[in-house]
Image 1 (cartoon, rainbow, N blue to C red):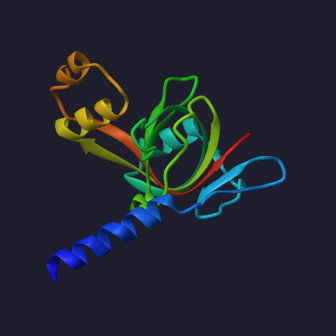
Image 2 (cartoon, rainbow, N blue to C red):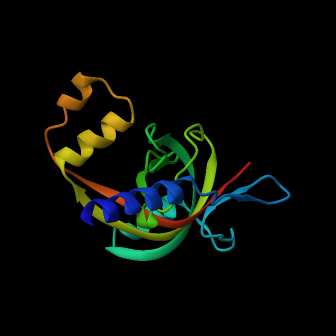
Length: 157
């Protein structure tokens, strides 16, 4: 019985991962996850400044994708010209980004927060990013990071 339940769960996970959660508007913008609007989006620098005085807050932010998980598209990094960087994951592991979207602009809705990332997790992300074994081994300290948990993304064209 346990094996049957495990098999059923596995099939459901595979089906949900393959579900098409992306729609597109007339301008070619792609909506991934929950459908959101661009109204009220702040720039990445404004969000980073607000995180300096707040632990967690709901936000809608616009930024440029620097890197995307090359294994599944299950995380991405946003950057701006001032060198700010924010690590983004997706609510309930419910959707993924296209692997080739680095360099594109996005609008995200969800919440921003600060968190210490463990060495093991940092190494895992470095591996997903395709870093060399030497680069991965050089990660020896946890890191406080600015993060964002998105429930919806607009990939701008």
